[in-house]
Length: 108
Image (cartoon, rainbow, N blue to C red; front, side, top):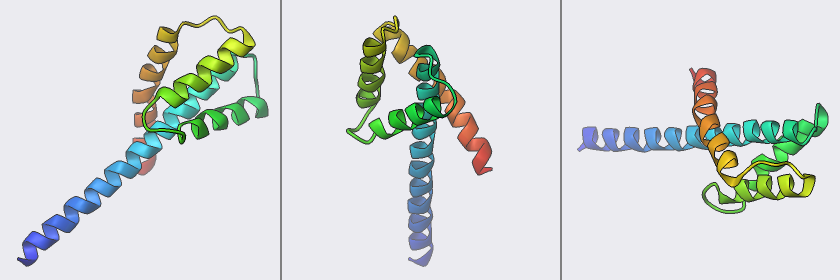
């Protein structure tokens, strides 16, 4: 029974680590998205960094990506940035593997 308990604990630890890494990946993706959006809204330096943080924090409103999408969509509309919903979603998808790669390089 001890080896079963050890295996169960190892699986739980792996799940916790995978969940933490996925949280970091999504946060990194959202930061990258925020920097992309900031550039399109002509924000630079500290303003761009602050905006990227706003995008990261917007992901805490609800599960999934819709809160992040709504944040960027709303800000683009307010600033007159001409990007389609599809393009924003494509950018989110394109940034995900980049974010995953960055986070994995940091954790190894």
